[in-house]
Image (cartoon, rainbow over all chains, first blue to last red; front, side, top):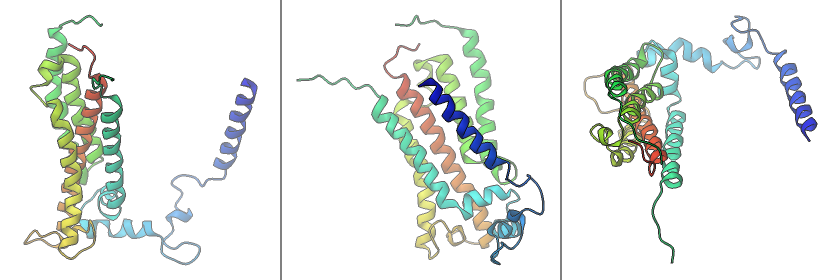
Length: 101
Length: 146
């Protein structure tokens, strides 16, 4: 059983390394994700964010604009997830004294 | 049952550090527009400053700072600040969470978005701080900590 676990781990590591060997180099300006147009001819959304983030929200930190303005519903979902986690600890961990019978 | 001990040195160090961590937390929240940071990170720092006093001083001293029953309403207020910002923007004729439609007079839509991001960051920070403190309180409840 232990040999099977090790075999599965090695297999997954091999798959991941094989997939990672095909990734583009980080910071290469010729990457597809840095291009202004995708291969299908449509505009890449990231280039719009980079060009217009300061004009739209007057904020130099582009990440904050994406997180708080363009994708604010996603951030709202994250906050609700954290809130739900807190409420679940309230339900699970709080020890209330309840007599049976 | 664990032995209780009282250490003035640990308490003094925690009292010395805690206000500075809290100020740095607010700095990270407010300066999210200009430097790395934002609501989540700043909220974690605020929670760290509150939890430091709780770990070092125990329940009796922590009651002077933020009481245990106050954490859940604070979390609700934090979530409601975010949600109400989106709802007000929607009520004034924009989309949900479209800060350009917030009813603050004398501001252009771009500066309104700037303000809206700040408002929601404060809401996120408040909620994250309250929830981290709440998790600690619920985990410790029932144990005899000083």
